[in-house]
Length: 259
Ligand SMILES: [Zn+2]
Image (cartoon, rainbow, N blue to C red; front, side, top):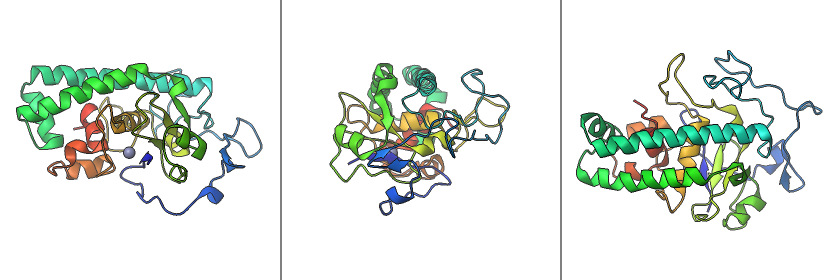
C-alpha cells in the first residue's frame, strides 16, 4: 500500500473518503497540473516570510515555491535536486557524528530514540548509509504526480493509490529498484527547508526537505519506516516509545538535527 506524508503539526492524518471530486487538479482520471497564467491558473503562493522572489535564485530563501504544481517541469527538477543535495549533506553530518559517537551524538540519539547505547548506533548507521545511497541515485525522473496510475506503476495495488487531500507525497515501500516518489499538491504549499526565522535551525513544521527524507525512509531498502507518529511534534513527544526508531518523521527529524 502507498505510504503518505501528511502535513505534520497542523495536518489531519485521515485518509478519508475518495476525494477525486473535490480535487481541482484531478480530471479524466489523471492529475492535471495547471500551467502558469492559464485560466484560474497558478497564483504565486505567499510565504509567511518571503523576502526573495524565488528560492532557485537565492539559496537562503525559505518560502513557499511558486512553480505551478509542475512536477515534471525544469524548475521542480532544480528544486528537488537542491533538496536532495541538502538531504545528503545532513545525512553525511549524522553519519560522521555516529562514527565520532561523542556526547553530542549520544544526546541526539537519546533526544529522538531514547537511547545512546551501541545498539541504536548500530541500528542507525546502515540506515543512514542507505539514505545516502538512495538519495544519490535520485534524479527528477524519480518524481511524478500522485495519481492512481503512477501508484500502480510503482507497485501499489489498484485502489490504494488514492489521491488524498492534504497529502504531501507518497511512495510504495516495495519500489526499491525505481524508488519512485509521488508528489502531491500539498508539497508546494510548505516551506522549502523549514528554517526558523532568520536562522539555520529547523522548526517543527513540515517542509519539503523533511518530506523528502521522510519518503526515502519508507523504502524497504532503507528503513521500512512507518508513520506511527506523524509530524515532528508527535515524533518528538513519542521519542521514548519502542516504535520511535521506526517512525518516519522521527528519523527525518533526527537527520535534520531538529533540536
Ligand atoms: Zn509517510
